[in-house]
Amino acid sequence: MHLDVLDLRTFYYRTALGRAAQRAVRDQVVALWPPARGHTVAGFGFAVPLLRPYLELSDRVIGLMPGQQGVMPWPQGMANVSVLCEETLWPLERDSVDRLMVMHGLETSEDPSSVLAECWRVLKPQGRGLFVVPNRAGLWARRDGTPFGFGHPYSRSQLESLLRRHGLIPQRQVAALFQPPSDRRFWLRAGAVMERVGRAVSGHYAGGVLMVEVSKQVPAPTGMGLRDSLRRPLRVLDGLGAPEPKPV
Image (cartoon, helix red, strand yellow):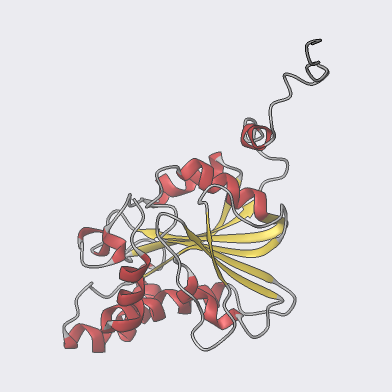
């Protein structure tokens, strides 16, 4: 079940803990993917907190927000780039995205296989995707007071296995949110240090969220073509003429 966009906005933009979480995850994203000219960058779920560094240089930035979650205009004070969409049918062309980020879009979906099929569809063959999900073994997945405490958390092996089955091949893995999910002043002040130490000591496992970068398998794994065929109208009546009126 998707979270409400108003709750997500409140957490990430109006609480100290949310701003700290946003900064910790976004710093890892930028370290993996420095902003570059000429890219189309998309985020699905509630990924807009990660997209801001890409607004200036990218050819196009789009924030896809599922209907079950709701949408908000973003970024504030600039031309809107967010759009409401069906979680299993995005308004993007096939092979059109260079960089795709998914946060609060996979673990909360009731149809994760279809979400991953859309990820595969819109990624360019040379593109990259990045999935940010709650770590099943982490503290953040155990606290309902943050968005990472909802939905289905994953272990690294579970997530990588799921991605591979949908033609998304893991390339790099990192973690973030090594600080505890507490809004106490001490932990907030220590957050930046804990992120640096956590990445140095156990950068792939111990954080509150797992981040897996993927490439697109071409051709798609067997069986992935079914959803594309179902999008087209059935043609069982092709060849039949239109009914003729009865003579009066």
